[in-house]
Every structure is written in structure tokens, then in C-alpha cells.
Amino acid sequence: MRLINIKPGRPFAVFLMLLPFLFVFLTYAIGSDIRLSANPQDKLLPAPDKIWDTMVRLVSEGDRRTGRILFWHDTWASLQRLGLGIGISASVGLLFGLLIGLFPLVRSFLAQFVAVLSMIPPLALLPILFIVFGLGELSKVVLIVVGTLPFLIRDLSQRVIEIPEELLVKAQTLGASSWVIAIRVALPQVMPRLIQSVRLSLGPAWLFLIAAEAIASDGGLGYRIFLVRRYLAMDVIFTYVIWITILAFLIDWGLRWISRRFFHWVQEGL
Image (cartoon, rainbow, N blue to C red; front, side, top):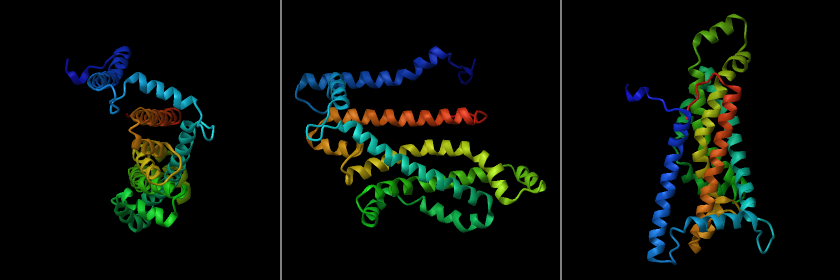
């Protein structure tokens, strides 16, 4: 039997899924033990049990000055910015994706402009955004939008263009207007792609969020990471990095569930 035709059973598939995580954990634990054996005061690779103790302390103990638990305060602040930025990008991207994909006049007018915008490194615009929009919440949200919107527009418009021509012809034959075609034909076709595109945009969105919070913020996951780095508090940094990874995974899992629940006919990817 060829290797390409071998499909693992459910238990073996779960084992294979967990194996890379176990390998990374064991590699880190061994590296930490080696460094701490040579220098017990080493801060670069804290022991796994210290990271766990730090995690428990951060999620349960309040700040001495304000009394609130900063871990959850930072989480809520970052999720608000991320959700608002991704929500705006998804909404605007869907609208312009439909317009560019369906209407040749709009495509000729905007397609190349959006393509050029997508080539601009979003982080290079960060100083400009801070100057124009200030150091408050707006500039952070705008950075996420600027960083993810061009990709969403290009991806969604391409999906609309790929809609079989016969579907559009049949709809017009039945008397459908351009508005009806957009809502009844194109929109159901593009919605699964929207979810997949948002999933792919989450990684860059987190990057832009952390960068903005690190430079100018008084709260958030990125702000806290860059605040404690000056003290070499690697146990706190690792805790926040692990938490960001868990949040990103849960958001991605939620989007996958929505895709399976409402668009079950779409072939499932990663």
C-alpha cells in the first residue's frame, strides 16, 4: 500500500496530533533543567512548574494597587480591540469583495488599487496611525483593519469571480436584479470563504494588535508582555504567550464550528 493511501484511525490520529506538543514540552523541560543545573538563578528558561505557579497567581490574584486581576483585564482589553478590528474588516471586506467580484466596472476601478494597498507593510504605517488617530483605542483598531482588510477583499472578490457563470446567467434569465443576484446567489457562495479568510487573518491580526499595544497602551496582553520584559520575567511572558496561543486556538475552533454547522457542504480544511 502506498503511503499516500494510509489513513490513521481516530486513536492513532489523536496520538499523532499530541506528539509534536509533547516533543516541544519535553525539549523545553530538558533545556530548562540543563540551564538551571548550571545556574540556579537563570531566568531565560524557567522551570515548567514555576511557569504553572506564575499562571495560577496571575489568574487569581488581584493587583495590589487597584485590586483588579490584571490578567483578565488585559485579556478583555485585547479581545475587544481584536474583535472590533476583525469585525470591521470582515464586514467591509465582504461588501467590497461582492462589489469587485460581481461588477466589472467596480473591478476595473478598485481591483488594482486594493492590490497595491495589500503590498504596503501595515507595521510601517503604525507611526502614521498614531499621529493621525492618536495613541488611544482607535489607532490600534485601525491598524488591525489596515493589516487585514486588503487581503480579505482580494480573497473574497476572487471567490465571487469563481462562481460558475451559468448560475449568474440562470438568475438573470429568471428576472433577478443585480441586488438579488448579490444577495441570493453570490452571498451564500462567499460566506464559507469569509470564515476561512477570517481564520487565516487571525495570525496577522494578533501580530498587529501585540505590536500596537507594545508601543502605546496602558493595558492589554501585548502591553503586559513588553512591560515585564525589562525585568526578565520570563515566567510571566511565557504565561501570556501560552494564553494568547490558547485564545487564538479557541477563536479558530469557534470559526471552524460555525463553518461546519452552517456550511457543512464545504470541504473542511485545516
